[in-house]
Every structure is written in structure tokens, then in C-alpha cells.
Image 1: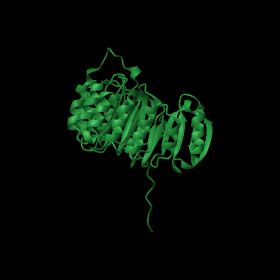
Image 2: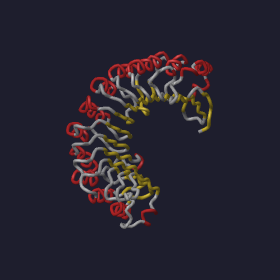
Image 3: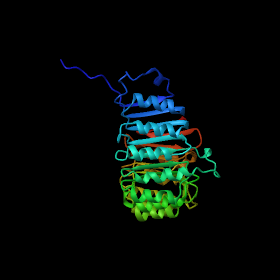
Image 4: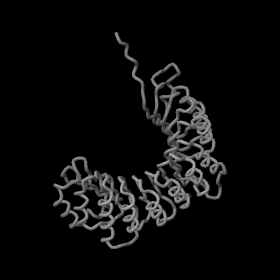
Length: 357
């Protein structure tokens, strides 16, 4: 007779953590837990200690809290089994990240691949900057297997990321946003990573991307995902980007600089013509002419397209949609109008309808 092993959890999400208090070290259900997502108001030493006792083999850790004790996170990282932690994601207010990055370098140098910090910029006082923030980011350059880096709501300048771009030779995914991210930091990472860069999210203080898009066109032919949804851009630069980055599959665009509708249409045609893998196109702030809708609906690779809500009131658009019901984006395709209003129109598998969000 074959004995079955008891079911062991691999992934767990905890909202607040009274459950942790009911468990003890004799419980084996969490021993094999590889991914933990914990969300609560405050992440402190008591929670950190309990996680260490119950979940010694965590590979991926996500912490979401209003206030995160950096010392508690660092201590948890130290107590984990050496070279097991693969990804760390923190959403919340931190005093510093230096203790955390130091612990990663000391104890998970070989295994660590993904680092993400998302702070509320409103929690940062511009005239008071902890010097350890600089050293904390600089330490990331010592992680040889780092593949993904997300820094949101933090002070980031060129000096902090130069070594990261040079020494993290596997880094391919960059996400920077917030009012305190210098344009130069994005530019230096794009230049240093070059062909390795496959994913880029930018939402920084300077409103027009200008030089950043030119650098992408010049250095990053393997770019697959681009999200500049919060920034201004020039249609001509997106056209050039589409020609030099044919592997683009996921594109989110923000505010186009003023241009005739014809220029917007030409930009979309360039993306669909040059990027054969394009699956997701978010143009929720770009106002297109009705004829381009037919072009989008008939594109073979697109699975989802998002356009601004004002198009819902365009008779020309509605007529074009009705004519194109048989040429939708495939059975899994979704075409929707999204915006600040409550009305959304979604066209999927030949159906047209409106709904309230």
C-alpha cells in the first residue's frame, strides 16, 4: 500500500494575519510554502518572526503594508535558508532599504533575481533624504543574477544606477516611476542594458520622453513590453520605435503631443505593421479616427485594445464597429473603451454591449 504525502501548500496570500497566531511550529502545512503574499497595516518584528518559524523555505515574498519595518524584513531575509530567496516585492512606506539590500547580498547572492519597492511618494519629504537610501540602491549592483528591478516612489538618480547597469549583466526588466526619478537614471540604464532590455515601465517627472524614446530606438531592439502610460510622447518617435523594436507585444501609451488625427492613425498602423507579436495595445488617451478601428479589429495577433471613452459618442465609430463584428480580435480578443467615466463598451466574440464599472 502506497502512502500519500499530505497536501502541502505552494502559494499563500494572507490578508492581515490572525491565522499566523493560530499556527505553531508543529504544523507542517506551510513547510513547503514557496510563495507568500502577506498584506496588513503594519509589518513588524513579530510577524517576521512568525513567518520565519512557519515558512522556512520561501522563494518569493511579497509584503503589502502601510508601514514596513525594514529591520524586520532584513532579519527575516537573514534567517531564511541561504540562497533560496528569488524575488522580493514590498509595497509600503520604508525608512530605508539599506538593511534589506545588505541582507540580500550577504545571504541570497546566488539565488536572488527580482527586487521591487513601491513607496507612496507622498510619504517622502523632499528636504529630508536618508543617505542610506543611496547606499541601499547601490548595493543592488552586487547581485549578479538580478533580472528585474522596480523602484517606485523613491529618489533615484544617475549615480545610483550606473553600477547596476554595468554589473547586473542579466538585468532585462526595468520599472521606474515617481516624481523623484531623474530622467538621466532611465537613460543610463537603457544605454547600459541595450539589447538585454525586454521590459520598460516609465512614469517620471519629465512629461515628454523625447531622448528616452530615441535611446530605446537606438539601443534596445529586443524590447517586448513598453509602458509609458503617464507621460507625453511624440507620434513620430513611436513610429520609429515600432520599426526598430519589432518584438513589441505589450504597449501602453500616455498623452500624445498635439498632432492631426492622421498622425495618430499612422502611429497605430506602424505598430501593427512592424510588430507581428503585438497582443496588447492600450491607447486610452489617444483619439483615433474611425477607419483605424476597422484596422485594429482585423489585426491577427491583437488580443486586447483599449481606447478612450469619448469615442463611444462618435457615430462614425459605432458604425465602423457594427460593420466589423465579423472581423473581431478572435475568440479570446477583447476591444474596450475605457476612461474616467463609468460607461464601458466591450466587444468580444462578436457581441456589443455596455456596462457599468
